[in-house]
Amino acid sequence: MNIQAKKLELVELVLKTDEIKILEQVASLLKRKTDWRDGLPDEIIESVEEGLEQAKSGNTISHDEAMEKFSKWL
Image (cartoon, rainbow, N blue to C red; front, side, top):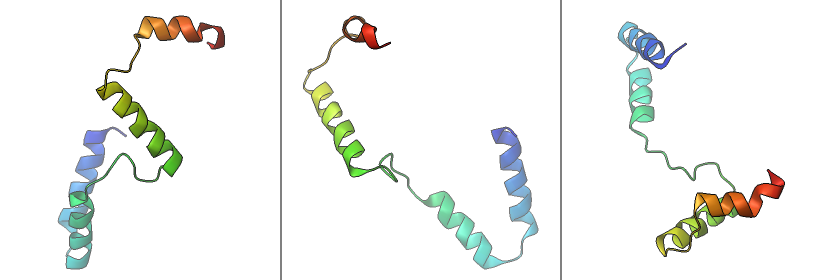
């Protein structure tokens, strides 16, 4: 099922319900902000954040350099 079909299915379900509690729960879910960190282990979050800081400070290499360096493992 594609995304548009799923949205239409949900709209139909919302329109058919008369239960305010369900509508409030749906609204709460849709308003919830998600973060890429949700559910990831602390070690992974720390590693990604370290990489982002390295990139901000210009401590990077080009794709070609990385491919050359790690080609023996690919």
